[in-house]
Image 1 (cartoon, chains in turn brown, green):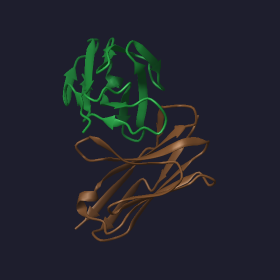
Image 2: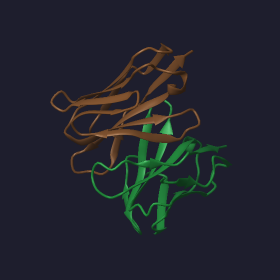
Image 3: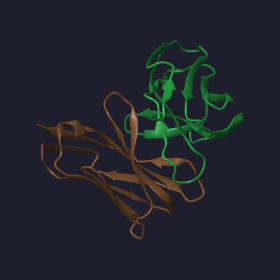
Image 4: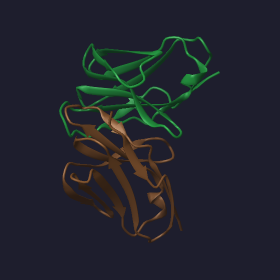
Length: 109
Length: 113
């Protein structure tokens, strides 16, 4: 069974700082997902990637398939970025996701 | 925009009751999922359905069953609720195939007393 590890578990930053959240996994995957969960509970899909890099606004996601590692970066962080960020992987041959435990980000004004 | 609607945001039930959690999606997605989310454990898959009347067990199916009689609706059933089933329950849907984003409902916070 694939294991997905995220670091750090908790992260506190000041507004404007550059944020990096890391995700490592242990077996072959077909895709990696980054998700965001706000305190109300709803989860939103941010990115889905199987190679390279994707950018959306101030968010950037990268993946290194050889090293089995992905990073989520937030540039010019803002208090509204405060949320739990979750990494999830699709193991090859499965449509089901295996989730990391999440990184709780707090951005202070 | 995809809408996944869960029937309740908060629910309180008693031990031994039969509990139904309902989820409806409006995008004609083939796949639907039920997860539970607990502090320190992350999201865990309870059941997955890839078509009407089709289901697969996830990682933690014990104590739960599911029903999918119509494509848009996926129900999670706690046959005899127990206190260890107190949790946040999340429903999601997606298209069939790999590398499809999942669309989540807002969750149901269920307390079993």
